[in-house]
Length: 277
Image 1 (tube, rainbow, N blue to C red):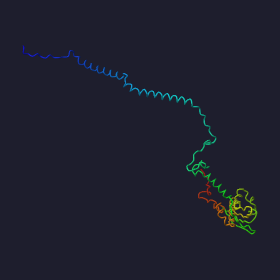
Image 2 (image 1 turned 120 degrees about the vertical axis):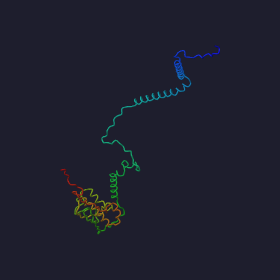
Image 3 (image 1 turned 135 degrees about the vertical axis):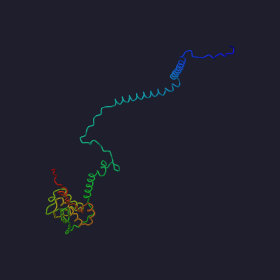
Image 4 (image 1 turned 180 degrees about the vertical axis):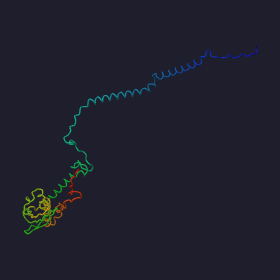
């Protein structure tokens, strides 16, 4: 009939596997594009050269540093020689030199090698004793002692339990102690020197005689007592000598005596014998 409308034809895929094949084709196209991009990136060009140039320079620098280190190690191995072992001194520390100077001290000082002042006790004591000896031997100027025929100067000296009664008279420098000479009564040269010091200081060692009577004490205490008595007798002869004799320690009585006994001890310092059982 002429009035009928033709029905539309249905379109169906030729084969049922056409859709999956289209998907696989799209994936293959994407993979090929990725391969082409990678190939273009690997292809040498201006960008590739700029990116790889610093890396090559760093590799060259590291290789040069390694070569220099190897050369230095080789030179060090060549320069190393066997060192002779250190010989041990007979006295430990004998080969050492002190180069440390305490702040505030002079490097030229004989005590600069020591530590603080507390460490200088021995050296300081020796220096002080030598200074005192020099001072004691130094003569006194301007001494005026009357040496007339009837001149007689007496005094008493003491040390511990020793007592010396001294008489100074004009003479030739002789010493008479309990009727004996000085060398006989005091055989020790040190004690003789100490006894002669007062007269030698004033310069009258050959112009006055010493007559003394000793009592009590030991030999050393008697010598100190005799020197003390002679010094006090010289003070009687010339009162102006007080300052010089005092400065040299001749007029000072040594007050040291026997140390007292302590409780729990045998004597001043002696302890009872220890018994373990």
